[in-house]
Length: 332
Image 1 (spheres, rainbow, N blue to C red):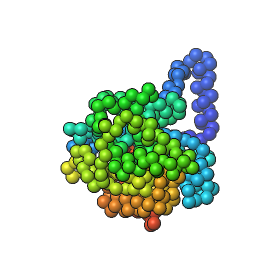
Image 2 (image 1 turned 90 degrees about the vertical axis):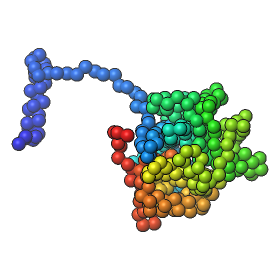
Image 3 (image 1 turned 45 degrees about the horizontal axis):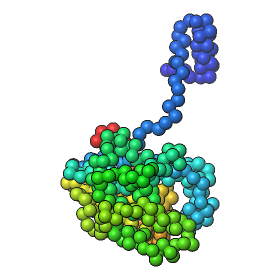
Image 4 (image 1 turned 180 degrees about the vertical axis):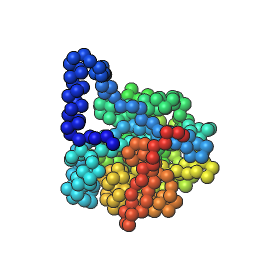
C-alpha cells in the first residue's frame, strides 16, 4: 500500500529538488508553454432521428444583477439564488445558444444570437455565432432558413454583419406573425416611449429589419414551418413568442426558445418573473404548461438560455421543476 503521509511527501520533494540542483536524474522539467488566452469553438452536435442538429454557442453575458431582474421578488432573494448557482457575487450570467437543424433538404438556423457587431463591444463575450458556425464547417451562405422564435435583439441581431450587410444572404427569414404585428406597430412603439428597455426593443426591430420586408415570411402557430419543424404557441415573453418541436422518425426534441430565461432562476422557480417578459403573468402560465408537457413526455428540451450545450430534460419537483442536463456525448 502506498504511504502518503506528510513525512514521505516532504522527503520525496527534497530528493527531487536535490537531484535538480546537482544535475542528477530524475529532474524532468517541462518547458514553459504560453497560455492560450482564448476559448475553444462552441458547437455541439446531436441527432434527432435522421436530422443532424448543432447547438451553436453565441457566448454569454455576465453583468451586475439589475434591481428588478426578478421583477416580483426582492433583490436579496434573487442575489441569493445567483450565489446558490455559483454565479459571481452580485452578478448574473445569461448564455445564448442558437440551434442549427440539418434536415437533409434544408439547413435551418433557429435564432441568430447577438450579432457580430456586438462581438467587439463585448470583448468577445457574445456575437460568436458566425465564427462557431464556421468552426462547425457551415458557411453562412448555405443557410436556407433563418427561423426566429421572437424579435428580441439577442435572437435577431445576428441577421446583419457589422456593416449592415446580411449575414445569411441566401436565407429566407421567418418570423412569428403575432410578434411581427406587435413590434412593427407604430402605435405600440409610441406607447413604449416611457419604458427605456421596450423603447430600445422597438427601435432595434425597426433598424434590424429595415429594407428586409420582402425577404420576411410570417408564420403561424401549430404549423410545420420547415421540414420536420412545427411551431408551438408559447406567448408571454413576447406576444408572439414561439417554441418548436423538431421531429424525425420516432425522435423529437423541444426547442423552448425563451420559455424560461436562465433555468437556475426561472425554470427552478417558474412563478418568478424575469424583467424581459412582456406579459409576465402569461409567461408564468406558459412555463407551467410547457414544462408539464415536457416532463410528461420525458422530452429532450433545448433552451436558448441554458448553459451550453443547452440540452437536457425537465422534471417536475412539487410545484417547481428542475433541469437535468444531458451528458456530453462524444459521438453523434
